[in-house]
Image 1 (spheres, rainbow, N blue to C red):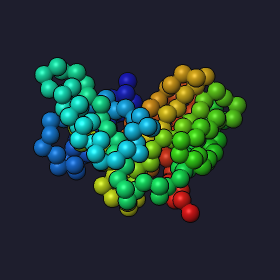
Image 2 (cartoon, rainbow, N blue to C red):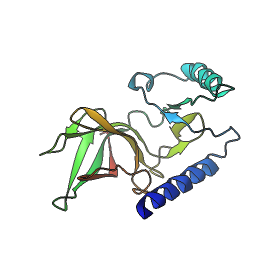
Image 3 (cartoon, rainbow, N blue to C red):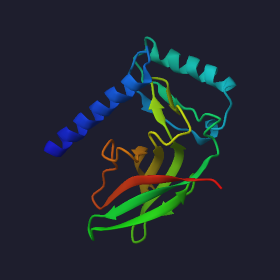
Length: 184
């Protein structure tokens, strides 16, 4: 019970810190984050249309809106992979693996797969957008999809400097982001 309370408290604290750092005057509804890999490479011309759609969903209906992930031009294509640490709680052994963005890695001896989708070197979030405010490694985060036997268990962000914020919860494995790998 105490662990659940601490997790909720840490999540709420992180959300407040992100809100304050974004300095946004926009309302802050509970967002539903969805990443569509097809939209990640679209240009800014599509951003205004998506923002109008999100605003429309937000106003009056009480529905959750989707947050758009925007990768700035100065960040696109600079990183090709992430290094993750996987702890097997049964054996208390950790392994560090480097996984290319967009590819899957199956943890040996299990049905658990990891798929890092998007890496942002300086993660920032407001009520409509998740982005990187610079190309510097100030707040590195990777969006990862973790599945077991084809069933999605986790779809969220892992933060290298804040591994306890929204961690992946699993009976056997713990997964944390260590670093990003730049393209040559």
